[in-house]
Amino acid sequence: MANDVEFTAIYRWLAILSLESLVEWDVLVFLHRHAHILLLPTSEIPKLAGYDTDTTAKALHRLQQMGLEDGRKCPRRVLPFGL
Amino acid sequence: MSASRSSFRPLAPAEELRRYALLQLMEVADSRTVRLALLNRFHHDVAREWNKNGFPVVAFGGSAGALPVLREILGLLPDDTGMAFVVIQHLSPDHKSLLAEILGKRTKMRVVQIKDNMEIEVNQVFVIPPNTDLTIADHTLHLAPRTLDERRRHRSIDSFFNSMAGERTIAGISIVLSGMDSDGIIGTAAVKASGGVTVAQEPETAIHGDLPRHVIADGFVDFIRGPEGIAEILVELSKRLRTGADS
Image (spheres, each protein chain N blue to C red):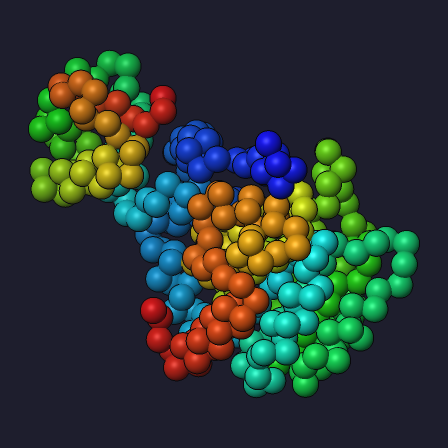
């Protein structure tokens, strides 16, 4: 089990990024891990991330609002913030 | 360039901090802890727990120029807010502190210099002794010999804010007052992350505005006010926490 220090740090990092839900986290991790090979239209991401389309679309939209994902740079390729 | 402008250099711009936070989280991406934290919906859970326990702790952190502000704020507060107050002030390690006596003259609340393992209580003011770092656990205040960071800077404000943020049974309210240097930046982010309320003195009203200015630049401050405004916020929060309102 994680100790209090680890919990405190993780709470802090999550708040800094304004992440609020598991789906946002999962989509962000998916994008991060596949940043170098992902050449997919955004509509394909739900199948791979394991959530339904609407849920994933909302998460992606929020990640974009937060600047953690930038779909504008390349419409067919999503790039996680700063990586 | 004026002296006041040249003295302000943000230490951790928000964008850099976000990048760092993302990298830190990705390091532990496979840990169950992240998922648990998100499942807990931590802001809401902590807020509920605070209301249930009804124990807000207000922590003032300050350095040079903070004393007159503290006196003014405490003088404006009623003595029955239902909050406990902790003062973390950078003090000379070589002299006896008169801080508790000075503050005691401006408030009807009991003002005490902290002793190790002292239990924190509402409607009282607890003042850090010289040459110590302070933490809180299970409503008990713990003292340790003061430590300096690798650049020989005080970190006593960060130390207390961090420990307060880790306490699930108190409502943490951090207030950064006048001072120099950067103590309090990390702790303010921790308090905010734990669902707490963060306040900084309006730099223009501070004798030394660097400390609040650095904290504000990091982007985790809920309220920026002068001394009178800070007292008003505390009175309002006191009312809301007592009635269980969460906004």
